[in-house]
Image (tube, rainbow, N blue to C red):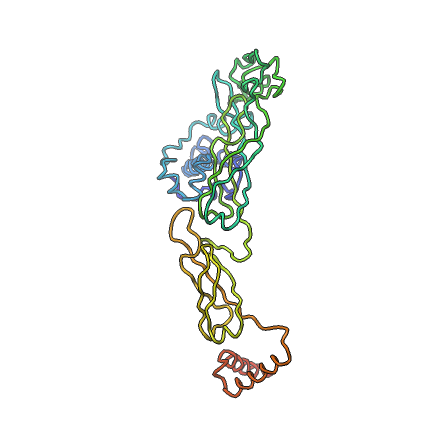
Length: 379
């Protein structure tokens, strides 16, 4: 198995769609296939790497495991073997395999016809921070294509049956010879279905599918965050011509919180305190997702100081230690002072001046550095 990054091998981004991945592989297959590079030993290596990356990234289950755990996810999970699993085959075989979706793709069902896999669906689920941290079960309602109840998905009028296509004899494919290539493409008569519907179902108009809404229950695990997604297998659109259904991907979006922000498994919050509390120290309540806790602030606390409350953050969705809650103190300057309050502050300031540098060591040190800078620059 190649240890290079699969996305790097194909030259695509990590959020590339399946068609983009297939397109990138087609380009590399044409460039590096050994039949086209018989005297280049590196070509086979490049081709096998591209084939391996394509096979993993076009399989939703393998791609999810690779995105989460890298090569260990697809190797240990039994998804992929060594290089020997990715034989080159003849160029004409690869041509038919790689370019098959240009002329019509799908999976073969009974009678040799091609049955299209249903489309995957995406549902954006918005959660509060509390819901995302604790986990919950939610009901969602989605519009989707389901099998027509009237014709059983055949597309033919009830009481009738589709007939075998006379052009392709039910295979859905016809073969064309172009030079030394023998190309198999979608049958133009039945468009790859292998069947002809002479009397279409009046409810689905021959498609075999109907648009409906369905309600699903989604179990959201504790600790999910924005960008995580939950895959519900076979809950996407039903496939055409009896093909298998696609999957439903529930995309998580966590709402902004009025108090906390989240970074990985830690929570952060800003706590304003009065300059009296900052100077003298004190103890007061701060909120956590589990309830209230007491925060003790020592005397002489400066604005921006961090206080860590261990185990008050988020439990990772994939296991591990619980994160922390980190409180950042902001010393608040009083406003809307009365004349008497201003007078008292002036008296307090005078007492600080009389005490020398011991009350404001940072300010005094900064003034000394500024004075030396001015002298050095000749200001």
